Length: 354
Picture 1 (cartoon, helix red, strand yellow):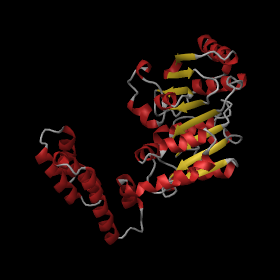
Picture 2 (tube, helix red, strand yellow; picture 1 turned 180 degrees about the vertical axis):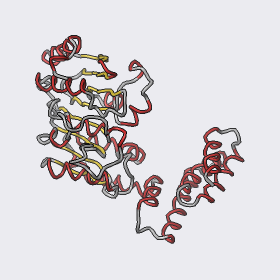
Picture 3 (spheres, rainbow, N blue to C red; picture 1 turned 45 degrees about the vertical axis):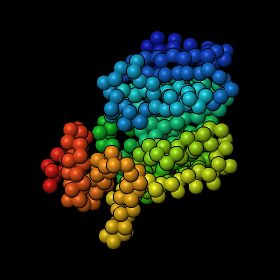
Picture 4 (cartoon, rainbow, N blue to C red; picture 1 turned 120 degrees about the vertical axis):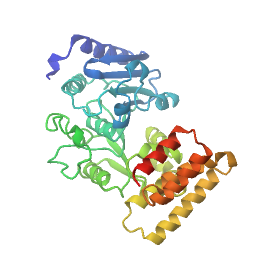
């Protein structure tokens, strides 16, 4: 789709954004776009950074049937609460990966107009997974200075990344046309890539950025897998990392960040991932780790009224390691809370796979 074919109302909305930025006027508006896209824009204080965010697959997949009036965009509340500004791009179809011809034409138009070039403060693209791909891909188009990328994909192009077969549902998109390779979009930005080096496919994707983008800082968080932002939030590291980068304070905050990241050893998600992914984990070592995790659960649910939660989470912990033990725990949880839908669902799932 050529830029010239963009609907006139889309072009008028882009000119409206330009007018507000050039004149440093506040703007708070959600712009519905054709083909199920939207832009949610909030600019209040031009002395503060502007973050461009992109929905990841999880949001786009689980909110497909939700109207844009009910959606705000990935990271919207977090960014606003920090006192920053945001331009959130909303994707309504998780299979498209921002590869729809309309969206490509939209970004080409934004780039050709240098729409955000005159924004006076720092400009940052910010995303995770599929959203990380978009944040890197369109960094140049958005005149960004920095990109913050959590476990990002660089491309689903078979020639460039033949080893990554995770997202086959999205292969129908054109992965050869413009903006198909994220490393080309962020070669001039300061890039921060946060990923798990023990998760091989994420490591290979991150390696493409480090090979082709010289201004890249890697923040390695071993043993938590692909859902990086959620895991970091649970150990109080997410805001620490993002805030340090946004404020140009990462090097100063680095010791505190890595001390905080060590808390993942007291986080069950870390041990669960390592149990499932670490080929060097012996049975004896697994037993030690499992007992450690159970002790963490006992500490978390130490009150008698929380006993059902302990057995529920213990069952979840054992599900991929010892299904008989997992079944034993969930049965105890069901005895304590026979009317709990979540517990009964887990029980039925385990019984159907015995």
